[in-house]
Each structure stands twice: as structure tokens, then as C-alpha cells.
Image (cartoon, rainbow, N blue to C red; front, side):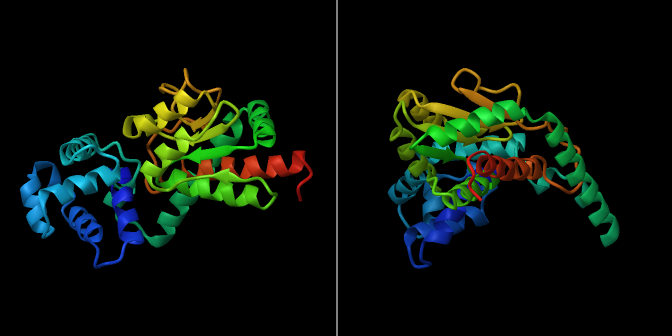
Length: 268
């Protein structure tokens, strides 16, 4: 459900309070768990607008209709396939602040150690060489992965290497379509669920015949056939009490990619 909320929050962050899109996004977030059972007329009444306006808003989010949005939301709620705080066991326990910090520290250190020991550094060097030789690079991801996309973009801009990103999912679909066989696409999907939620982006990438590098921890994924390279993070056991899985391993990899690039090509 996190990705759906992320799209709604983009509208809240980028829109003025008096706009219709802002009102619809705010109403959806406040009633997020009731929407799967809500009619379009009921939602329209709550937003003081028409059913047609609700349908247009859903298309802006990347869904063909409210029904498609409700279906995706219902799946997210029922499966709880959301690497978020709702899955972390620690919130059910009452511990001192010192205990919480110690557990978080140990979980993060364990994750970083597993990542360090599992990364294929020779493969990463080949990916870095591909980045160096590519003139048109785009990177894709959502939620925390998109923050890492922005971090990569910022880091590489410091050495004159432009990486293109798009925040809105529809803009990502358009960006994916703009690539050519000479382009490089980097897709960050730690859980491997990007395709499930954003199949059009993936299909657009495949149709361009561009080079594709995927970063994920999911060994059983749909990226194998379409990716030229897959950088695997350490597999998650999903037993952390406080620290969300994947995040710190992904941060380590993102920083290593840039530092190794700068070291290889004398950018200091």
C-alpha cells in the first residue's frame, strides 16, 4: 500500500490546497482503508465533485479507472506486501529507549555485513563501466528506492555525469519510452515488486531494447529475462524488530557505486 500512498502524497505535496486534485488526494488518504468498498458516487460526494472528476484523477495516478485503483489498493491491504512499519515486530513490545537503539544498531550492522559479504564486486565494476560509457542514463524506482535514485543522480552530477529520473509514475512511463538501444536504464526494486505495480514502465523499457540494470534482493523475480545485469542485495529474512529491511543495504550499495566510479575514473 505504500506505493499507492506515495502517489497520493505527491499530489498533496505538489498541489495547492484549493485545487480539486488536492481535495481528492486528501480525502483518499483519510479514508484509505474504506475506499475498496466505496462507490465512485460516494467518493465523489465526499470530495464535493463529480464521478467523472474522480475517474480523471485515477488516470493521473496511472490507473485506468477507480475500479482498477480500488483493486490494486485492496490487494495491497489484504496481502500486506508492504515493507513498512506495519510489519515490524518491535512496536508490539515495550522497551526502554536504550534497548530500542541497541536493537536497531545490531539489526543495521547485521544487514550491512550480509550485504558486504554478498555483493558481486566484479559484476558491479562491469555496471560502473557501462555507466561510464553511456551518454543517456535513466533510473527508476518508487518510495525509498526513489530517494536512492535521487541520491545517485546527485552524486553523479558532482562529476558531470547526468542521470535522468522522474518522480510521478506517469512521467516514469514517458521517460522509459524515450530510451533507445544506446540508453541505459537502472531499476531499483529491492522487493522485486516494481513490475507488479508498474508493469507499463517495465514493458516500455523492454520495447526500447535499452540496456537494463536491476538492483534487487529478490532472487525469484521477473527481471531475469529482461535485465542485462542484476545486482543482488543480501536476501532479507524479514525478522527485524525495528529497522525496515533492505534500506541500509541499498544505501551502502548506492554510495559504493559512486565512490567506486569516482575512484576508477579519477573523479575526486
